[in-house]
Image (cartoon, rainbow, N blue to C red; front, side, top):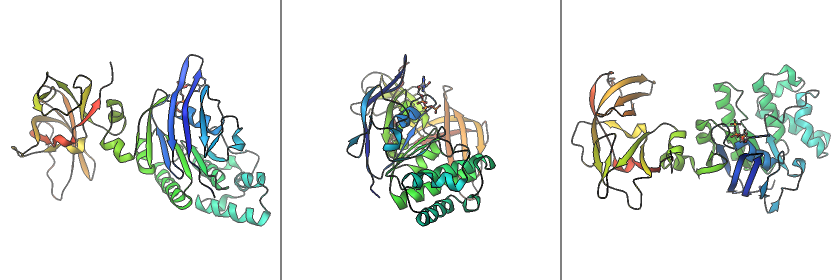
Length: 355
Ligand SMILES: Nc1ncnc2c1ncn2[C@@H]1O[C@H](COP(=O)(O)OP(=O)(O)OP(=O)(O)O)[C@@H](O)[C@H]1O
């Protein structure tokens, strides 16, 4: 099987006065697993539909491999698809649904049967080959759709919320299957989800979308550890966002009533400091080099392996932090006065949303 990279080049899509995609630019390497992540309406499905050929770009170009595909119908783009809108054929059995792409390609009977069995085994549906789609659960249908999409070893596989109908356990199982499939076959995958955990778990790179554009694209670790903006920091996981006040010289963190060293080349007017909850810890006092401050606990949420705390700073700003529990750790109580601290290196400058 050949593996193809792809690129969106300044692709825009307008529906009347709505701009669903706005000069969208992205290059994906052959074999890469890239996820489009973003809130409802940010343009994820539009980007995938245009790549698949189900919608036409208003302007711009799309390349799969070296070839522009914008003039090709969906079936000539040679991509596998698991789309909610691209449902199973209701009058065909599971076996025939899955075999369909091979019949289109005139694959011989023996090879076809072997291959259908193999992919049905992969999605744990080998005993369901003779069922009709209306005799399956939503999750089973999604797995048949996945089997049908991958059966012809497509160089590019597109998936739009393929796991949304599954319960948590099955969802995690299918995530592993998709990861295993990708590691084994190495095709290029474009995956759409609004589940950030799923995006971080599966992808080589995540493109965080906002109003038809990419707000940030990077590895899951880059996106989580080094968000470039308040939008990305708040969309991926939870964070504490501190405002910077004061003039030149040292920066004044308003919420904590304290000063920190400025970061070169960063405009404090347009910048906040994002500190992830797990980077803030209770401290004994006087920790060298740490930013430390007083707080009062307002909420203690026990989560098994860790505890999630909510607190307020002396000037009433809300804070969140979490602690992993060592053996015999005493849980703090709501109302406790504590001292918290973080390493200044864990405060990431992020562009503030313009009000
Ligand atoms: N056929 C259409 N006609 C008019 N507007 C559309 C059409 N399809 C999408 N839009 C608009 O384009 C924008 C992007 O929609 P899109 O479906 O790409 O978002 P999404 O990020 O996939 O959202 P969701 O997570 O809800 O599926 C939205 O404002 C949507 O209302």
